[in-house]
Length: 437
Image (tube, rainbow, N blue to C red; front, top):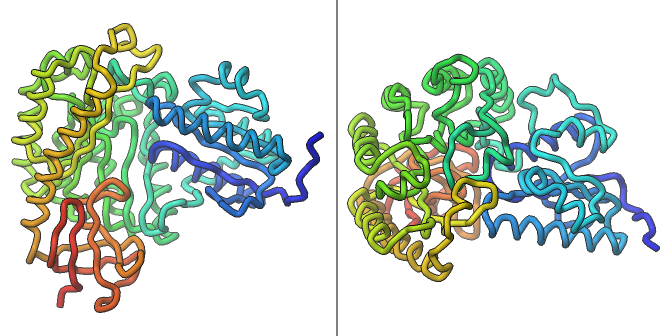
């Protein structure tokens, strides 16, 4: 018979998946802290009596990681190492009945929009007044900033609307208040995220308001960088580029997942665009903001993808010379539109195609990095790691992009601050530099 642990009533929050989940966990932890409940993020001390797992259900690998994590803590509960185990997030939203049946040892499963119910279960009050109050898991100087929830796009491969619901924009005044709260606590960079950031405002204001939002956020004292992620290409609001070009606080950076380039793949993916429109948009972005860094994400092995489709994508990647690029192998997700298609590209071939694209991008990245040698950039320093201070230029987002390494033995910078760095060396995905005189 399991005995109750002697640990105090501390909560350990485990976050899996994307930056949107990170924000959700930070909000949850902020609420718990406001209720005088001790909370930690991904603690390894094994001194918490309650564990909450914020799961991801996006693709096969992420789902498996979430299930493995639930099973690991379920086993810990059976051994009496923790008292309570709760599961929330996308996997729980999508597969709650199955999870309750297969892993009944979990005390309760919650969906993506059930924070008040979860807090009630934890004997905590949902405090509406905590607008923007979060317990950051990132360094204080840089925070993810979620401007909307859910998605209205019909992309055939994506299960996000099943887990997150339709698009809901957060009102501008609330976002400005959140930004002020973050800035008061030392945040200098807001990494703007959403399932589809360029759709922002259509539901609330009947027009796209991303450009206006960027302008208002840039007026917040203490915020020095605004970085735009997850911009959908179809219906892209061009006024955003004017703001980016003219407002020094808006980084010359955009993360725009394009997914593929051949017309038949784009049509089957229900992306609402064509190869030529995609090429024209990328060219227009670069024309209007000449020094912009474009990051994109692609999919390899989507149903029906032929060798010709892959070769065409490889040629386009070679010619486009994106500053940053990532690629996923296609995951056949139930209840999506593409699930009715035959998942006919073998897993090994999917990976081979993805590796081919990344090999091309690796060469491009090295060439682009080498062009930076001898130039000076404003760098925000995130951490000291080993012998180096590690930071990023305005052309690089946290976790996914290039880093700038400065030898700590011969240079000093303050973590969380900006410094002008002259680039002295370059590798495929890293730059090396010294503090500029």
